[in-house]
Length: 88
Length: 322
Image 1 (cartoon, rainbow over the protein chains, first blue to last red):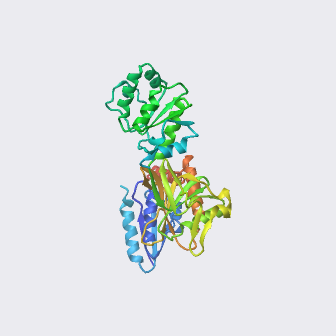
Image 2: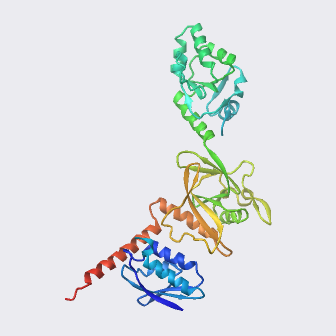
Image 3: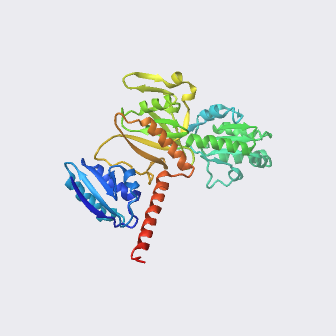
């Protein structure tokens, strides 16, 4: 298992569109992905779960990947967050 | 339809328009190629530039009164000039007497001449409806059209993907089949696409491995309908991991049929997935959107507000060391 902390830099945080980007990317990989915010841990392949976190601008999340392609997936997800979900 | 034989038109509309054929039937072999009508007042009076002769010509009170005001020689001259054009047919509205020269010149030129008791306004309305319908652009698609809770769902996708089975399952649950396998789409008015079945196929359908069945016989008349507005296309595709599918429904996808934008949903299917229930959900969701509810948008709006509020509170409290 690999994990990394990220901070949301896009203006609105994880609303529907960024959440959809996140989930779509995660769904392309075999590994299981979890998002942890405060003490809530959700399956990041579920879009409703990701949106339920209501992670706002500046919030800190932990991305956890577990599986054969965990390294690549984690790198890509972190990159997506860094790229502000292609929003700005 | 590109052209309509006058004889076929007469057969279709004889009763509805109370048409009476004056003179010989030889003009019935001509063709109507235009959905518009024309009142040929100016052509009768001699102005034949820009005369839209290829339309059905309607002679109302004004035209007849004008002809009657002329002497016999002038009537014949006027009619011969006008009838030298390839006119599809002539319809006289109203019950008034007509000059006897009219049927004889029409016969001579081989143009069918009808008379109706209807007023010009009534005739124009009914005739326009009929011709609009006949000349409406149409196309045929491979798919099944089902009325699900009043929403016309057009199922498309490659052969043998299960369109008929889904249609059958929906019928079993009380929805209504319009057509299976072949659907004729007709653009009735701007933005309205009507789907219907073929006269030949009626409500027969083929179920692979079983054969042909008759939905009307099997489920009764409640299970069928003849036509339905196409409101959403559901394209069935095999689930492919590498493909991306809609997750939010925030943006509508459309597909163009005859210039009508039809909402388009790509629905991945795999064994064990209940497409029937999903189809019902699609139909109901369509209704909600018609009534102004958009679940994806509403949800996202609420989420965005929450997120903004959090950020606002956070930045307010930042550096607040009171």
